[in-house]
Length: 383
Image 1 (cartoon, rainbow, N blue to C red):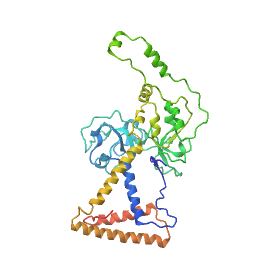
Image 2 (cartoon, rainbow, N blue to C red; image 1 turned 120 degrees about the vertical axis):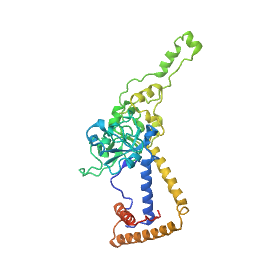
Image 3 (cartoon, one colour; image 1 turned 90 degrees about the vertical axis):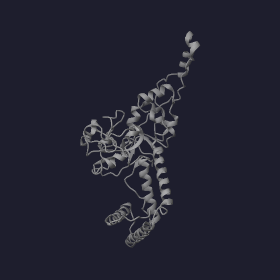
Image 4 (cartoon, rainbow, N blue to C red; image 1 turned 180 degrees about the horizontal axis):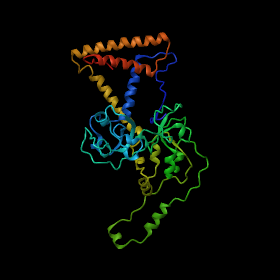
């Protein structure tokens, strides 16, 4: 499935023989770190992103403790950056919004009444270019329900739309989710709102009608060029300027009736026409970001994963070298404690012939962390 999907079930540790190794546990831990880094990207957890202006893509949160009215009033919706979620809204009711494009941190502006941002107190009253969908109030999809939804008995995945950035239950997309792996999806609502997409529907892996719809005559830009260029130029034009010509439109002539569109990768964006007429149309419909090579979510996620991989490798190299003798002793003791507890943990499941699942691993590490916090000096555990 695509990178931009949330799946209810996680079968990472489901082994038909009920066996899991320490290496698999560590791999799972590293995967969690990579997945987290994919969402957070290279955003700082110490500095408010406001100073960087409208960022192309960043992880955002909505604070319902500071603005409870956001649940019902669209004008009160606001988004805060990663650093502000730590330093200004710790312990608050936060909604994780995953990532949004072209957004500037709202923390401490007029939407928060008298509450100031602890990291960047000098902010303008509002960020006019920010866009807020229903996610900022904690609801998603055409059903406008929360996620996870305690009242929904159906286990379903959620998929984010490339354009509106809302999240949809797969069963509410009015189209079967392809079995072929895909990385991007455009919901049926956005396809309906942006007519030009029907000209590119044939490039998607969505099942569509075999017979194309009747197509309105497109403007023949080539002939328009000829008519414009054959017009007698004025004397000033002849002497001081060259006659401009329009770039030929490469939008497919035929359009296909389609609902939700699924794309196998992000290269479909390269097929979008960039003639003057189409560029103006993209601007009018606020979708110029489709032409930005840095906009796709997979590009953002890969940068985040690359950053965390470099950090992990760097930590592996420097971990022991930067420790003094006391820290090394504590590390060895911590490692032995972890090894003994893991041995008992695996033995218990082996004797009961049970499969170790993610919730069991989480419970194990939660217990280890609880023991560590009771100590006066936190030990240094090996990864």
